[in-house]
Image (tube, rainbow, N blue to C red; front, side, top):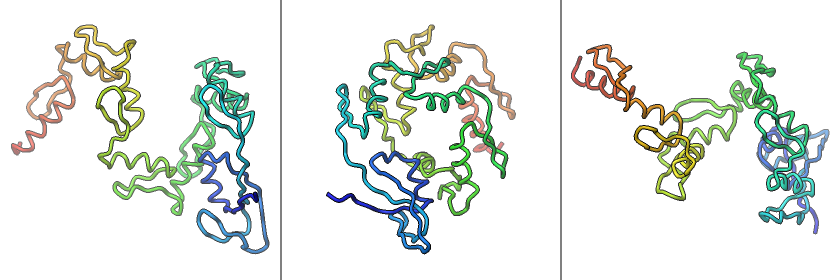
Length: 254
């Protein structure tokens, strides 16, 4: 069967690179005229990439039945089951299939930020972080929220932000009816269902899903009232209670 061939321009190829497309092969093409039509944005171009579909392979993992497009990818995946990583970070223990991936990971443990924006002087640990950031300074490429005008460096960041403006909570707990907007909220919540949960109040045995929530709860067992109203000098244990109290002053016309 003949391979399916299409073409993409440089800009769309850059956007595709942020997504995993291992089923495609990209080859550089050029012409004296704009004789290629981009399959993504329908714009004619003279320099870009020819896209062909990679032949499907049958490299399946015997542990979880995931299928990969090469023996190498299957081998790297197998380390996730065996934990026999050939390269391992000495600081956090995370494993990697290649030395280059380990080297890319190491800046996470450093405060150095070598990649600098020439426009606003923001600094980044990784080159891809700077590349995403530059979209903010490009009016043709900026990902702006239509509800609050906040700008994001990538479409995926904008999509993640839009959840804030929605009542949807797609992340659901399999154990209790709790739902969350973000996956990180669900992950933190799962500590409640973990018998080894470290966030337990030693005074009342109440369980919390994060260290910050436990710390906030400890105010209940304390006589300290650090939040003071600047209008009537009333004090509160929690900032939220002070905020509610101040609203009462506004309603009363103080």
